[in-house]
Length: 110
Length: 118
Image 1 (cartoon, chains in turn yellow, orange):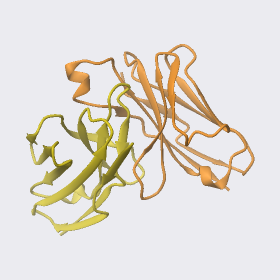
Image 2 (cartoon, one colour):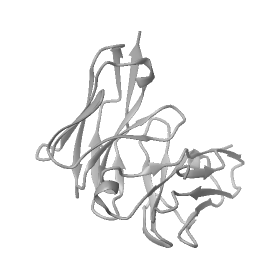
Image 3 (cartoon, chains in turn yellow, brown):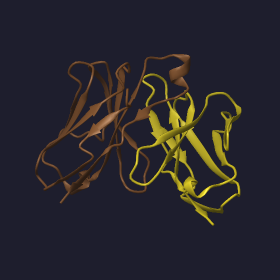
Image 4 (cartoon, helix red, strand yellow):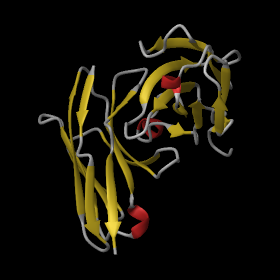
């Protein structure tokens, strides 16, 4: 099975940087995903890591350390529209089921 | 292609009634997943189809739940004798067969069906 932990809530100021940590213990690993989910909407893909290191995509970056079972999502130059829940998910071997953490609610304040 | 489509978007039903949800995946995607999400939680896996074959079911999927994907295209999820605990968002997602590109993008989710059992 999978055990995925992430903080429940984080608050930051517009223009600032926020780092959301995720730790996981898994029986199989085939990649780690971060999704953004606005209230009442479906999760949307943000980033993917399968090898150790940092992946950068615009204002969002994600880091993975497989040996430590650790990932983080870095959100830079925060905007009000970034207020959402951020879900960490681990994919197992085929059929590539995703196991999700409970999500971190990020609130961006002016 | 407009992505993964789910119908209805919202469903309110009385306890004990049966409900059925539909998911239309992206046309070339052969893998289809159903997830359930309750307030303040991440999505939880329910079941998985590869083409028309249902290959895995979670223990969350009690015998009141049944899912089908008869022609390997759209899928339906039926809940019989609904209970208040079934109130949740039911999410469908699809993905294509393994490829370097698809592996890097995981799933595409539908907008979900929000079920309220009163």
